[in-house]
Image (cartoon, rainbow, N blue to C red; front, top):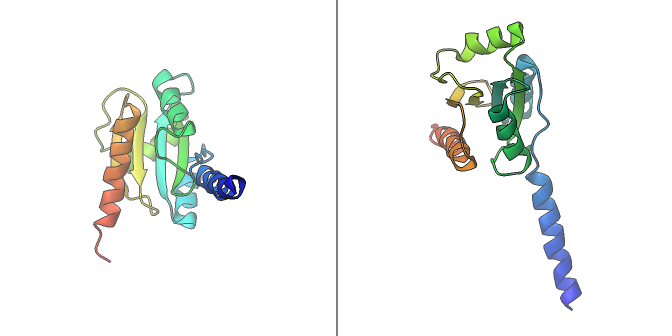
Amino acid sequence: MKTLLLIPVLLASLVAGALAEAPQPLTDFRKTLNAASKDNKLAFILLGRPACSICNGTKAMIKEGKIDVTSADYVMGDLNIDDQRTQAAFMQKYGKESFGDTLPFVVVTDSHGKLLASSGGYKDAAKWNALLAQAKGKIAAKPQ
């Protein structure tokens, strides 16, 4: 009897784990925005450097599930600020935001690339999750 009760619990945890997995990051700015539009998902776009410890720490927290950027809800862009074309495209669209002077520069957008939230520099998982909640709150507040 206990075995029969355990099966649904295991299946539910497997399904929840699959839904909560981090999205595979895209490295092209336009492809990230296009994928978000096509899939009707939010975009979490991180502009940083491969050698940036804060950038890598943020990506690790996403991969570990500490930051609620999941493949069910988000397309993720992992963009290199040292690529001049990538940096120019990102800054042309979102450069008026106040990111500060510490990487990563992060924007959360709706499926059409409209900015919902932005931030720069180090954040712990709770602060990143608060930023995501702020972004989702803007979508929920939109009149239908």
